Amino acid sequence: MTGMQKQAGLANGAGYGDTFAGFHPFINLLYFTAVIGFSMFFTHPVCLAVSVLCAFSYSVYINGRKIVRFSLIYMLPTLIITALLNPAFNHAGGTILAYMPNGNPLTLESVLYGVAAAVMLITVIFWFTCFNEVMTSDKLVYLFGRVIPALSLILSMALRFVPRFKAQMKVISNAQKCIGRDVSNGNLFLKAKHGAKILSVLVTWATENAIETADSMKARGCGLPGRTAFSIFRFDRRDLFALIYILACSAGVIGGALTGAYQFRYFPTVKGSWTGAAVFVFAAYFALCLFPIIVNIKEDIVWRSTESKT
Image (cartoon, rainbow, N blue to C red; front, top):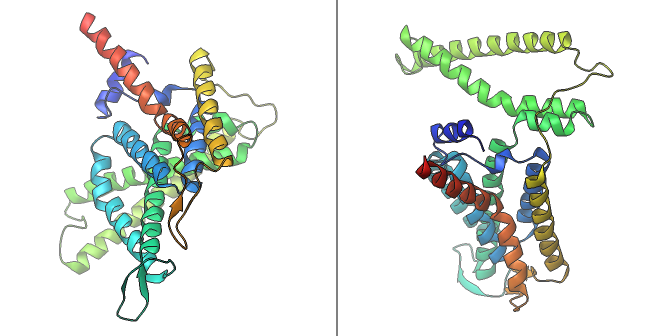
């Protein structure tokens, strides 16, 4: 990572910058495909704990303190509500803890399964927050532009639409605030009127921007046969080592799944695999999920060492 990238990372409040985002786009996509896929299918408590801790840690590293606030405001209530919904409607399980006012049993298995489902949900959300920061639109266009150009174009436009929409809405809102026509001015009726005005301006801007984008793409020959594309991405030795690492860890994880190391049931009673050989399988899963943090910590140490010598 160059000094300019490091300074950009510092400016964004994300430590010393995200080194993993500087890897080849194929490595980034392969990693997120693996960790998100495994997080969605493995319900073993150890796997859930490893995945949510690594996903949250990596999200904090690249997003800074704002992800902590996001977790407290949105993720924690989501975790609690999701964990409570399952035992409220699912009464299966052999260990009865109590009886509800309507006579249905509250079972330990339903409570534990609700917690597991809630952790799985927020884990996937955390991984997707990291995915959104690392997999930029230019990376998606690079990976899928030649194979499925229409899909890559839709994905890139969809990913950048919401951030641009929010930024433009803030600009319009600040401009309206200067003349006393923001949603914070006036009574309830005026606030609604000002909000409708801001929304109207925003929709007009989005429509004009879409027309300008279409004209620009047409002028640049988008969709024409034989059109080439410039790319700055190169697959180097570092990416090769990362590919071997991810494939080796994924092979260990898949091997563990095939041998039953990740088997864990919640119904009718809680039962799982806790063999000594499973420790190595869980270690492979932990090493896979922790990979971006490992490379970032290593790069931070090298960067600090370089700064101390200058």
